[in-house]
Image 1: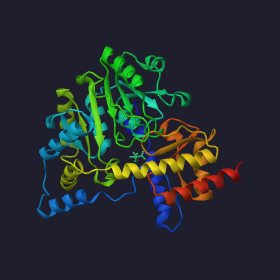
Image 2: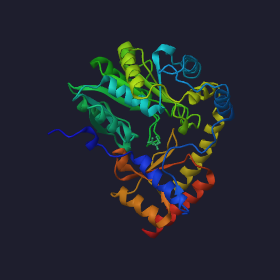
Image 3: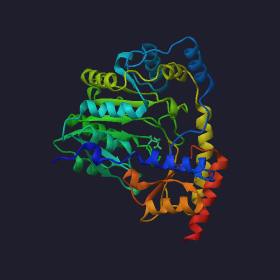
Length: 378
Ligand code: GLU
């Protein structure tokens, strides 16, 4: 008998380790939590004020399940003005964070047995969501030496008759790498030639510290592109849960809308009003602060002799720890009360991810405990 898809997936590891760290903190333990990628800044004032205004005006009812037309218009303008990406309000479906947009996309395009190519290291929820949509993740393990970017040969070996989609996540979680333009063009060319969907998860596109981020938008044939973004990381709105998928493929858009309407109706109405303000809220001060933290973390990691690639975007440091990353994280937490995510969660054992979306004080404390930990096991 076939297993049920839920028997084949584990709970989200990033959320699990974050919950464990938070539980220990609530019990009074002095844990330095470097797990989940969650900016520590308060959500910017204009966004909060817009939410308060919505509450006071009584905007507390259902909305269009695709999202308020005013929000989709605002996102459309924001994408065009800030990123030169053009989707009309009708081509956008707002969902409960980028996470649900990804699920809506997978569930819309996958039939039983369809394969989706993922590049490891990869974000934990992609394989689980593909399996839940009765698809099959096909994992291409990229190399540290190649900056964790796939080569053409590596991708071509994975492309088969059943390949339905390729997921691209740049800037990348967990590596912090940004795919170079040639790599993006190579992926787009293969997808375009073979009629494979590209789901591009660009939630970290604002958080770039070195080089430039290029979108898959404009490279992939428009009927094959599903674009995902969210306000969680860019505007410190993780708990508000506002993400969106956009596509010019009318059939896929219609399917994503149907799923959204049956699974969740609209997302929280107040959060939608808040997100309208986010489209007009400057976030460069956060990026500037992340730059300082990145500089600090890179300097420390170098000083400690860690083996890592300098993160160019997002807010993670992904470093080598030898064979047993799970054991490393368990002991680091037990002995030094520092919580980090093992690379195995991202299909890249032998590495550990720490988030630098934390204050410099916390990072200082976390890094010095990591150093003590490594010294005691040298
Ligand atoms: N995306 C963040 C992370 O990778 C938040 C947790 C999650 O949703 O996985 O840490």
